[in-house]
Image 1 (spheres, rainbow, N blue to C red):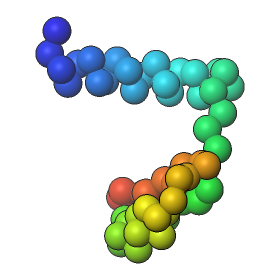
Image 2 (image 1 turned 135 degrees about the vertical axis):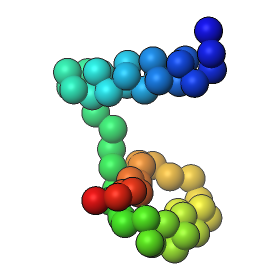
Image 3 (image 1 turned 180 degrees about the vertical axis):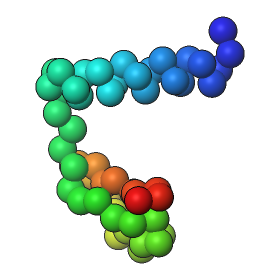
Length: 58
């Protein structure tokens, strides 16, 4: 099985769990791609307790 196919299947499975509310990721915030460097530096200093979302193409 090609590696890219495996990642696509994994992502689809996670999306399905979130869609059925079986998985509820804790998201701290959503930021535009232009601020990615700033945001990653801010959270890179410690252990994150939740996730950030970097928006690509709005």
